[in-house]
Length: 212
Image (cartoon, one colour):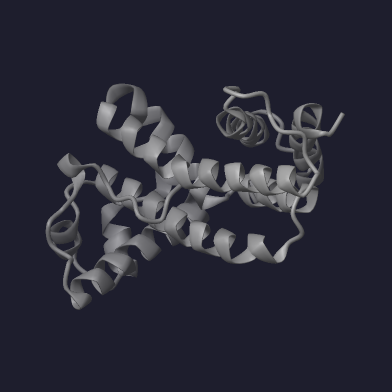
């Protein structure tokens, strides 16, 4: 979920590099995000995105090559915003468990209609059929794993955490735990509370990071 990433080359439209073009693209992305939040992924239609962006369908497709392109760029745009917000908030929180708990809260779905998670699940469904999409999603995850590695390193230096076993790749594994809990909530157990989800995640971290 990284701020600097963009769509794979084969899916990237060339227009939109001027100030006006960037604003037009952002109107499309905001319209797409709003529509996903309100109607879910199945309710997203090009004509409705265009209407909400105050553009024609042809104008929308001047900046994007397909509906898949719009959806993946919407995910990248949302992740850019989330990365900026996360990196502004975390330094103000004490190192160690408080910072990790905040990271977990920011990572997990905020609700059953969380648009970022709707987009992630849609993109995951497409990834097995496209090496490009799979690589794109892995790049988006880099900032989450990098931030988690920083939280753990700071916690170890402050004496709050035990250092993970060398080579164990804790950030990769813990993000996978968070992904699994998120999908469990979204697709199987919607009655799980946000507090219970976070506690399950932190229990997993405590088993490895709690100092002996």
